[in-house]
Length: 64
Image (cartoon, rainbow, N blue to C red):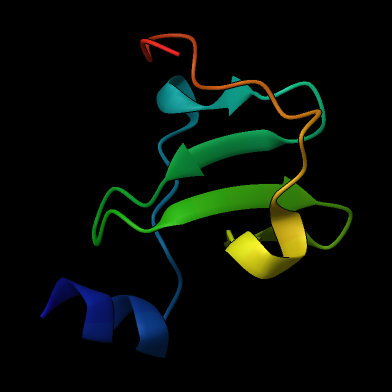
């Protein structure tokens, strides 16, 4: 249900959970959990085909 709400309105960004992956700021939507990325146009869903880049660092709390 929350993913439908997000697709009709906007994703909810919790600015306290944003992290920098060495290229862009990233977080997950607080409502639907979708990975989000911030580029020059603003926040948008993370697209693995478009956004995957070996220069990106993993989340600081991940075990990679």
